[in-house]
Length: 92
Image 1: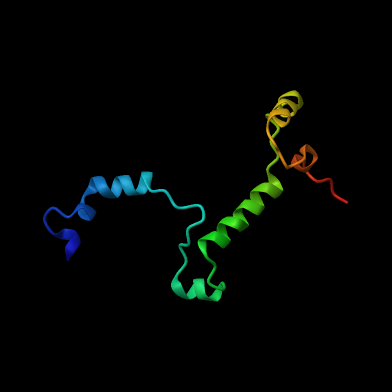
Image 2: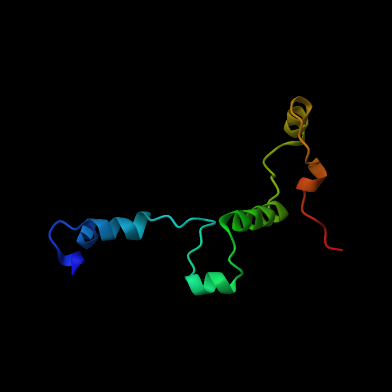
């Protein structure tokens, strides 16, 4: 068995400890099985990232930018997103 072999890092307690604490799962990476991936329509990482972007923009509204600061930024840069679009939508 390779894990029990001499000098194999995966068999080290330190490696296991670090993997349990410091492993980062990718936000748009695909961790499904190949069969699940096929059943889901074989989405690409770009498609998953675009979906995540849409979700973020639909629900994240910056409240930390004061109106005066926003106006100053918009006065200097060609911001295309209207400030009104950065507000939560009111239920109809």
